[in-house]
Image 1 (cartoon, rainbow, N blue to C red):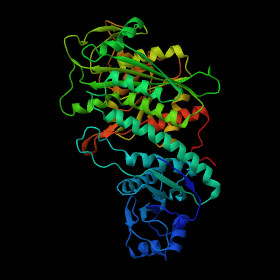
Image 2: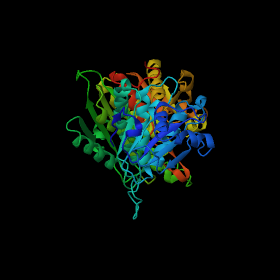
Image 3: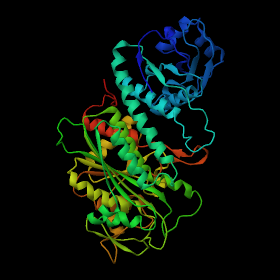
Image 4: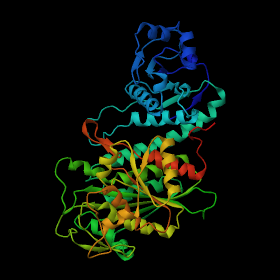
Length: 506
């Protein structure tokens, strides 16, 4: 998708649809004022008569507007001015682009950079518009014999009232375009069924990304023989009950000026289907356990965004992938396994398998002498009880890293919440028979899962993102969300010093 920037009078812009946000109080923003003047006060009259209710997210299409060069005019309600915070701005964008995606139109022009959002500048607003456009045109029709027609929208012009803001809008649109590509790549991987998206499929996808990157990305895949020789018995134990072989996938991107600059490492949980193993899950909604690889999918998405944006940073992306199934060879409750780090783990519940693949991947990350390591996993149902479906759970062994991720989440509006990782929780993992158990009981289940991972991340600054509540949604709109690609990409941009999209930037 293309996101050019224009500073021309919007009334003179030739486009299939011109999109203008308006407030309920009737006071028009600069772009809307110019359009109102050119169209015999069409917008003002609609609001004054009550023919358009500018409540937040309401959309009205005007198929013809006198005095304008656009084929159509779309009004989008912003609600009241005091209502216009980040979440309201994004809701209005989503409403606008959802409506645009339904039109028989190849292009549109949007005037959202005028909207006053506290502490957010033009680049952030342009970035959010580009991300919203990508989300709106996404469709997953891969397995339908008669797929619905795909949206035609391919070009969105970002209208800017002040010429001084054009470069900021252009940069914001570029970043939003790259992140939008990563979000949709993540959604597609997450939405694929488990009989297609296997550990071997993810490995092939990584190799394809590398082949298409013009040398910007390299990929290494460790198969089960290599993992056995390495000593990654914890990762391998999860896949013992499956006919699908496990994989450890390593992708390397070197964008820093100094190739020896310590890399930042992303580690994704890639359980391509989670039956629970011998500790079998209930049947209801078990189909959604194809989403248990959304941590891995978000790592692929962050790599996709990185290749598109090309930040000056060195990145290692590691995906630990297995399928958790029950059969005669499956790991059993009470089994003791040896990890790559050398610690022994008593498996009390085979449905706590994500930490068993991640712990070996975290140990593997030591060899890169990383500047930071962030793992991403749909790890615990407990995080949904604590935080619902709005915030990602965050734990870390380094407060500065935690704050950096929280800041990235605020900038990207892909937010996380910091949970404690105190030593007092560690004793819940005590085992009579091994160095530690893989679960710590019901109290603080998300935190004790983080405590387990922390035992394998003591050589570097590390953080854990539990995305079980944010990676997908259930119900009629069931599907992967693409989170937290925006947070992860922003974190990398901040590390590279490339990001212009900062909170309160002047």
